[in-house]
Image 1: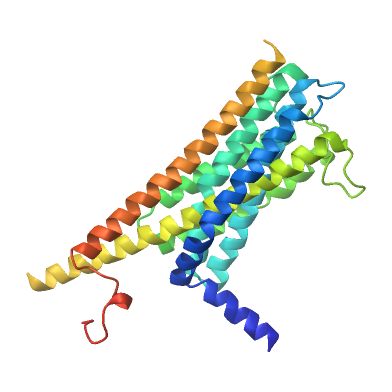
Image 2: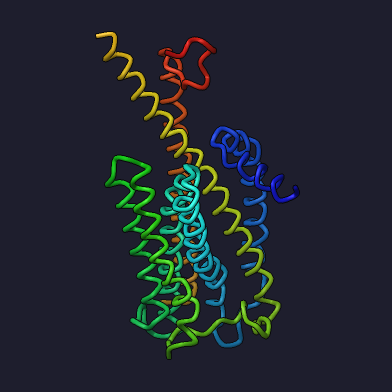
Length: 252
Length: 56
């Protein structure tokens, strides 16, 4: 009984019209909370101490690490949506992974650019083809490929099914990115926050990092919801134009 | 180049990309809303929002 109620609630939310009503209600709140968290996060990022070895450049971590986390989380959201497309054939799942791809590409670009800008003063090089950097670059290319694929096909439901298969195949890259620093000898350091034995970084750096990570995550969900709303509207405009053209054809 | 240069450039790139994303979502939303309003104004509505018995 409880299970069927939960499924009913979930399918209610998955109705595009109900989704639009929900988005209109909660988007302003999400945007406001995101802005407040960014204000606190940015204050903490510059008010806390520098590192004894890295000096002030440790502040690059507060934008680099959240962007890198989001590049993987966004792809995971797309993979879940891809399952929604292939298993339940739900149009909102199609809309979700299509809307997330440009966001994922942007966060991956931030991670790559800030990583390079951090690498130059700390490692003495802008770029190395080590396992972590290369796998994240492959992720960036995959996002670009998915955006191009969605734009290349006129039929949105067909594009969604092809994209969904590609997203699920490409998901193999996510554990490779996460564990690349453990499996191979990389210039990039191993994980220091999400570890089985707890974070190894000092609280002085952990707090700004966590606040910035939550702010980035909320920014992603706010933009994802708004981009999904835009995509639903885009499909409605296309459907109504088709209807109008058909009606005009009948009258002629 | 000083460390300040790398920090400033990192935050600038992040802000620029984030603002581009926000701007794109905002502009795209406004354009779609305008298109829907134009269709509505010319009497083209979704089948589900048409009065009962009106749908062909």
